[in-house]
Amino acid sequence: MREISPTQNWILIALVLALSGVVYDLYFFAGQTPIIGAIFALFIGMPILAFERKVFLRSLYRRIQKLPTLLFIISELVIYEILMSIGFAAAGFLLALLGALKPPKMIDVLIMPFDVFLYALAVCATLIFLLRVRELLGREVFISMLISRYRNPVKEERVFLFIDLADSTAFAEKHGDLRAQQLLSSLFAAFAEPVRRHKGLINDYVGDAAIITWPLARGVKDARCVRCLFDILADIDANAASWKKSYGHVPKLRAALHGGSVITAEVGVDHHKISFFGDTVNTTSRLESLCRTLNRPVLISAELAQRMTLPKEIIGETLGNHAVRGRGQGLDVIALSSRAVTVLNQPATLRRG
Image (cartoon, rainbow, N blue to C red; front, side):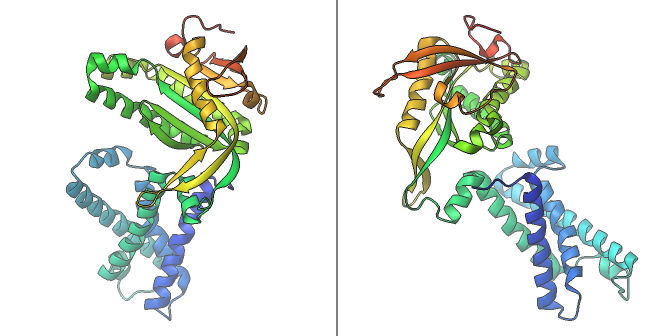
């Protein structure tokens, strides 16, 4: 699947908004130049989309997110009205200044008519809904389900990263299941940005573990799968004081990376999901379990490591061939560590370069 950059994503959204403005003008004002409707649509819609994507007013967005659902909806509508009115007035003033609009009264291009407000609200709400669904499912899953890419099983090559919270049982016994779940929620939230930045997909959460995946070519390009993992570790390391203050505990992780052929299929009836099947997935899970045996927090199969050039700050330590439960032959394993991550996520016995 072809990668879409953030810039291309915003251009696509802008084109959709501009097209909605053209459609509005053609439908309601047959004699008006369509470009005027496109400009109004961009000025009205882009601030709302930028607000929803947390480009600006992030703290305000976070505050209203914490409100009860009804108050959240009301707050968003009020903010939408303010942003759309400002955008409409700015567009009208600009077009009037350039001579593209010659209204009888300037107030006619500064105050948004009610029908324009309803139309703009409907277009923006539809776009936001689609973006929210895409965020909920993940961009790759959303597009795959939209085009029914995996309706019939497909064989492909993928990279898998299994990340597990070490000592989660001990934490739950000491602090209770509710507190342990709060810790996991905060931890999984910390995964989101590095995974998004390195173009991965959080496929699933299983207990205290997260499963992240990439198409093989995308995952090994610039060692994205490895960089993603160590960005997560570095973020936890950098915010150690905050974790300690909130939970009295800095999360320590175990992680394993492996790649190869899998069967990918869309499964389910009432609840659809894209799932991966095959030895590659099972081997990654077994490799993560091997972290305990070898007392290493991060392991990667030599097979996958050979497909990429590791970043300079990442140290690889060859551990030889090891038997992996459920696999007929052994697996060559490499332990990874980083000069940028302190001992908070490294066991004391890990050899440093």
